Amino acid sequence: MVDAPDGLEGAGFFATSLEKVVGMARANSLWPLPFATSCCGIEFMATMGARYDISRFGSERPSFSPRQADLLMVMGTIAKKMAPIVKQVYEQMAEPRWVLAMGACASSGGIFDTYSVLQGIDRIIPVDVYVPGCPPRPEQVLDGLMRIQDLARNESTRRRNSPEYQALLASYNIK
Image 1 (cartoon, rainbow, N blue to C red):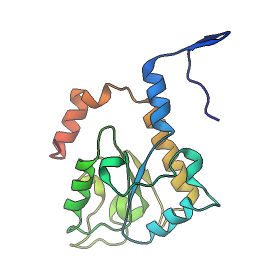
Image 2 (tube, one colour):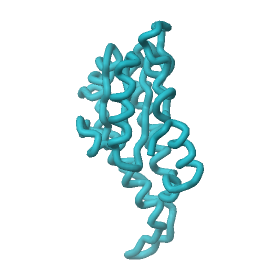
Image 3 (cartoon, rainbow, N blue to C red):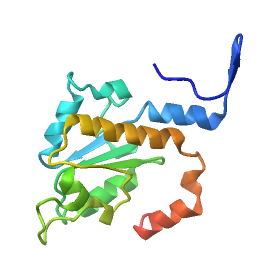
């Protein structure tokens, strides 16, 4: 069960800030969009299975529509030809949106230091959490998801409108 946010409580009432309630709701109802291109996708499937059960964290509904997702999970090798598609998927997601780079290939190109492989998705979109490994274990994926939950829970509802955030998106040529 989720702990109640900090606030005032007494017999028959509980009061807290709207920002804390919204953060708690966002953190416990993430809808991931799995963008799997290679072996890391198999580990994500294991994470979705009964043994590791990602649904314990409120992420049991993978969304394959960017307009209905708020967590982009990029897994595996991303070819440079695929980079515009990943960026388009990111741009189609509604705010707030988070990105998890899963595995060595999505994080840094992995062992594929070639002309055709993107050397990390952070070259085209901002990344919130990196999950290392080749491929990472399901426990690492769950740990990365919990880090995203921490970001969602503690993020100010005004952060996405801040000049710093707008400058970050502008540095990636994202409107």
